[in-house]
Amino acid sequence: MRRFLSLALTLIVLGLAACGQKSGPAFKSTDITGAPFGGEFRLTGHDGKPHALADFRGKAVVLFFGYTHCPDVCPTTMSELAGAMKQLGERAKDVQVLFVTVDPERDTQALLNQYVPSFHPAFIGLRGSPAETRAVADQFKVVYQKNVTDKTNYTVDHSAGSYIFDKAGKLRLFVSYGAGAEVFSHDLGLLLAD
Image (cartoon, rainbow, N blue to C red; front, top):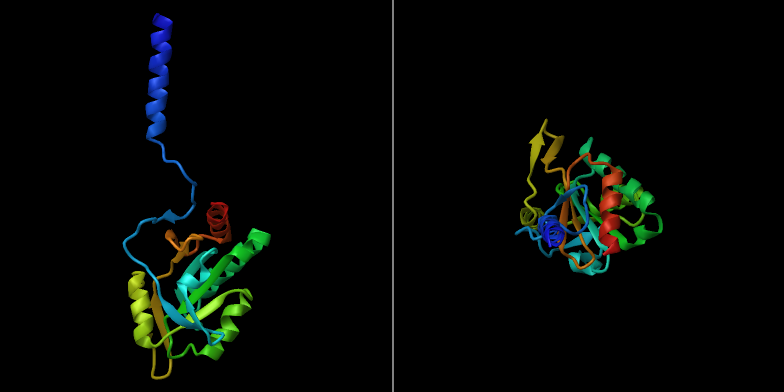
């Protein structure tokens, strides 16, 4: 009887310990599932067509805000995303990267058409009017502002992280700047497996 009670107590303790453990994928980036921000939007692509977030249901979507004249953050992130697509191999067809410019005055459709696909042919550059850009950035808590250096030149200080949506269009992850291609490919792989 004592042996039975000891075994029963051990099983109960193990069961309670298991209840406290999180189930689900072990993401390398920050899980923000259920975050009270984000949402649907529609902007014009570098291809001249309107694109909405809902257009990409069935794919994992990476959303990054940047600009083509960015000296460091944007090309680094876009290169990491291109590397992640390479690491994903055949599964990359189920991933859509969206680059939203925070500099719509300079980032024309033609310039986005040169810049964004140079990293990967499936990537889409998006732009809107200054008011549309601000509205979408505000939805995702993205901060940006011009930093004028002289009359003809300026940079744009901006938030540097990326958002990842699952195949159902739900906002799931935030990837910090400089995380690396492996973090993107790992976490996208987990979302694609769901």
